[in-house]
Length: 187
Image (cartoon, rainbow, N blue to C red; front, side, top):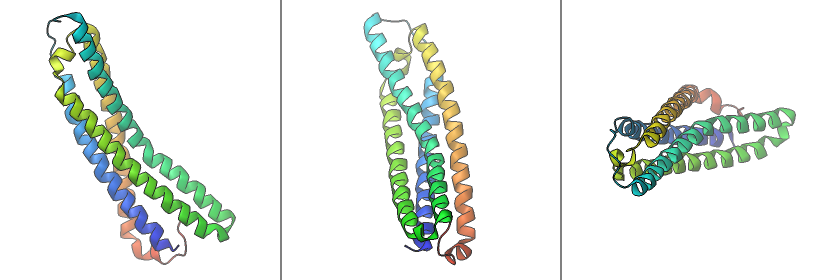
């Protein structure tokens, strides 16, 4: 497998990751704003409101999880790439195998990026179907929602930083594409 396959596969991953991450960031920001603007209403019959609050907070927590996993994805990808690069440096005969494994890891990372964005979008959609004011009707639910907004904010900020890093790295690869394509393998 040539270095061009390796490079173009990375470019595809970086583009897909950037688009799916920006989509997830925008959806998450909208959901976070809706949660933070929710007002308190009087609890109508405690039990249904509690179930609604649990459902609402559950969707929000899953959204936080997907955003955090999307943030960790490029870090795991980099660690895997470093491992494969180290294998090549130890034994250059492994460059073909390492590049093949790297392409497989890249395709898996692309799929994971898309899956996380789709699942995050589904959680945002599920949140939008629930009446926020009814779900956050009591003090406990309001406190949980407040913590959720904080976690969403931090997680979204970290995802933005990971997306910016990946985009800058993509620009670096594209701007030096001719040089990179001249090598038999790229670390």
